[in-house]
Length: 151
Picture 1 (cartoon, rainbow, N blue to C red):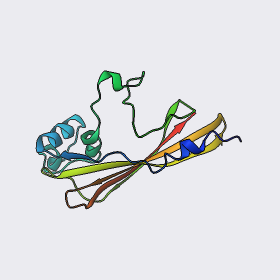
Picture 2: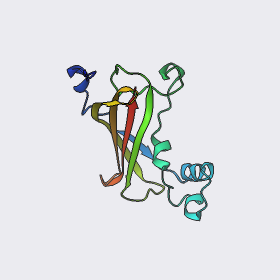
Picture 3: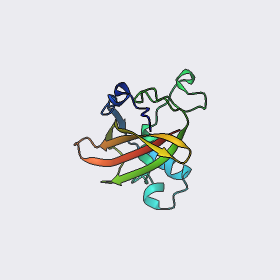
Picture 4: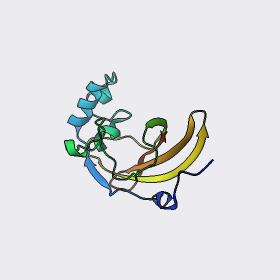
């Protein structure tokens, strides 16, 4: 198997995004809870954020020229890969503490791994993004590892 991963490409491992700060509001929690059809009062009343709320909180809001041809936001953390077709490869989420209105959360993302494997359909490139969300006291709130596969 010939490597598609150049030393220059692998140098991107460890690259991090600038931290993003977001204030959690009761209104945002309520809107997310209603949109995701939550049933528990603590979510619907906005007292606590439901699981996955943090994702929408930190989604980028790009201009049209910052979108790929398929309408996905271009991730400035990622280098140019030799393979282009992306597929989901996995998601591992660890919740450390609940999110409440008034919390100020900070998210940082890191390109934590790039590796290659041979699959039944040919060579595949895997990359992993590690997102850490902490509160204003620096306490971990959520740790998420996303794996994507390129073919």
